[in-house]
Amino acid sequence: MRRLVLLLTILLVFLGFWSGITSYLQNKNPQNPLIKPSESVKVITEESVTIGVVKEVGPSVVTVSEQNTAQSSQLFGPFSILDIPTQSPSQQPEAVSIGSGFIVGADGFIVTSKHVVQDIGVGVKYQIITSNDKKYNVKNVYRDPLNDIAILKVDPLENPGETLKPAILGDSGKLQVGQFVVAIGTALGEFKNTVTTGVISGLGRGITAGNEFRGLVERLDNVIQTDAAINPGNSGGPLVNSGSQVIGINTAVSVNGQNIGFALPINVVKDSLKNFNEHGQFQRPFLGVAFKLISRDVALLNNVVEGAYVQSIIQGSSAEKYGLKQGDIIINIDNQRIAEKQGDLAKIIAGHKVGDSITVEIWRDGKLQKIKVTIESAPNQ
Image 1 (cartoon, rainbow, N blue to C red):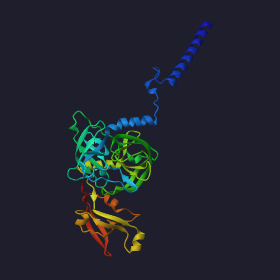
Image 2 (image 1 turned 120 degrees about the horizontal axis):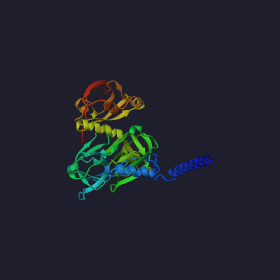
Image 3 (image 1 turned 90 degrees about the vertical axis):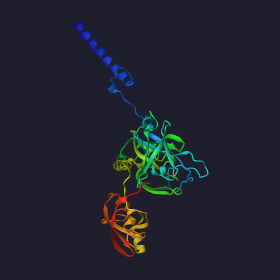
Image 4 (image 1 turned 60 degrees about the vertical axis):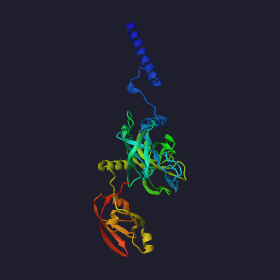
């Protein structure tokens, strides 16, 4: 009996000892065969996240090049679009890398910034170069008339055996300040697939960016601010989250500051793509006036009414067809007041659809008038 008790005691001690050894090995050596696969722990670092993002998204990033003899451009203003100077007329035309983009469809659709492909003159040719140096000629360029977005179409069969890998688009409506991001693009038009990291520094920013010599000045609202280093040539490239999802298009950079860059939210791009897929082109409601908002204080000082002062009329637009004139002040549209606190003219027009009939109330020569206008689509250039 005593021997039996002794044997049982020894067995229990041995089992306890063996259990302790197994637990120790599991904690010290995750590759030990005693550990079940479901029990392994993966240590995630910023470095591993960045590497993972580059492996996943890098093949979807392209360089946009142009063959043109346009006058070289220069940057200006507090915020500059990220374009690359093209050649002077005295130089022979050759392909120059001018920006970046990313693939959104295996059937040959690429998204980039509109200002990257703004040249529409005779003889202008665009080309995209993939991360593995395959070249595709751009067959068509579709420019969004309201946003700094363009869609390029290439023939995926131009390089037999190659596959275009689309990037995954995220949701910019869920972004938070401080969130980790990665920017990928062709920095300075020379260094393909340059990778920089940073955080989202701000959301909902509004800036005026442009290029004086190329005739492009644009108001960018609700853009993402980031401290990830971006440079001329990065324009049109993706801003990516830690989940390898594109959450913005790199668009502008501060000329005077350091590591202050801006990107259009990807949800704006997704809306543009939806609009394009539905119509085969961009259909945007367009009135056709260039305007400046007159505040209440300015209106009182100048003895005029508060509203949108029409600075010029776009030729062939709805505004011209239905009798709006330079110098008119648009007070409201369908009883929607145009004022600093009520709403901007552009936002009110954007809330309508192509083909809608609207009533435009204007102040002209000291008198109020109402004009019926049918909204047409903005011209695609």
